[in-house]
Amino acid sequence: MKPLMVTVLAALAAGTAGILRSEYEKNSLSVEETVISSDKIKSEKRLVFLTDLHDKEFGHQNSRLLTAIRQQRPDLVLIGGDTMIAKKDQAGLAVTECLIRSLTKLCPVYYGNGNHEQRLRRETHHYGDSYARFCRLLKHYGAIYLSDASVEIGDDLRISGLDIAGRYYQDFCPAQMTAGYINKSLGPAAADRYQILLAHSPLFPGAYAEWGADLTLAGHFHGGTIRIPGLGGVMTPQFQFFLPWCAGTFETGGRYLIAGRGLGTHSINIRLNNKPQVVVIRLVPA
Image (cartoon, rainbow, N blue to C red; front, side, top):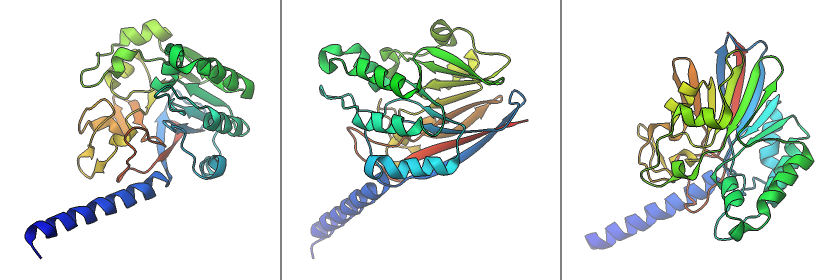
């Protein structure tokens, strides 16, 4: 067999194997736990963080996802945005509604915006009343919507949801966020409570920490699509390559950023070495 033919066949075999592996991973679920201690925490709490579902269903009406969450017995579920896909004049809310309806039967649910929710709100000429319907379904099922808003929970938690402006989502060269921008949107961070920030993009950990977030929960980058051991995620949706904080837990000076790998895909429907993720966070007293 000629060398060129061998090369072509090898490439086809590798491509087929990659596609099959990606399809397997897209339908898998990885439940991963992080333990964080703080002297601001007065009693242990168990949180589940979900992000970037993008209309994905793990089993009928997300039965597998819901079972994985129930098994964790969370005190709170935090959603970091983009449960739906807002693209090409289409935005269905059926998967989002089914998930919210089921989750709110388990425990309190707090929802922060991603770029897709903000697209629904901003581009009504494309999506009609989708954003108004989204807000109504959250209210109907009792989920707490944190759109540039904060809520205090018990005597030791404060959760804030930051709406990130479009200029910070630009491809290649996004604007650089400052703590002042967050302060203008949310006011000052809590000093006497454990401050959790839902900020969809993990691109600005310095600004989040400077503002005063003890724990920032982000997503958006889908784990970098393809993850290479030792190098991390290959590419973000904003075309940054091998960005360190595509996914994982990062700590600086006692302040944490957790970038979830997300649950679904869109546009680039590939996952390699990058299984969909349910993030579990145990907050324990120091």
